[in-house]
Image (cartoon, rainbow, N blue to C red):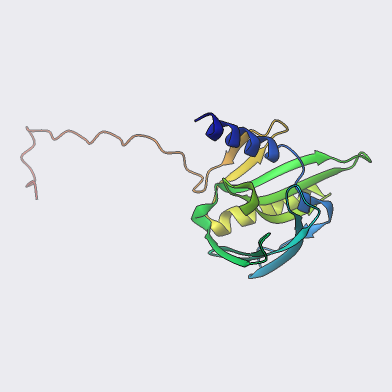
Length: 177
């Protein structure tokens, strides 16, 4: 049980740092699907770079990569597999700000990068577009790694049903059917 909690804290700690794909400016356009993105992921405890390819469409994403053993892996991720469209902001070493958007998955290796930009306006526009297109909530990740819902997928908060009107037994003007 302790190992499970340890994995969760590692995953949350990994989310509070800048992702490895956020070094270059990236922008996948939500209005021109399908979109394809390639980047190299560094495998843990080695200096080997593994190419990763994401193809994003209106139903989700497909991830292709080569494992440490050299075997190719292809995985289809429907939009329901993601927690939402997450936004983060970082301050770089030179003092500039970087905003990233990603399809947030419980496994940090399956998060799909959508945008990495220095302009907040373009990222905000894309954030809303991706959320609406995939039917996912808009999320924000703060500097501690906590995830907060900015807007739910439907935009409507759920409440309990209203009570039905009571039938007035004295009214005999109309039949019940």
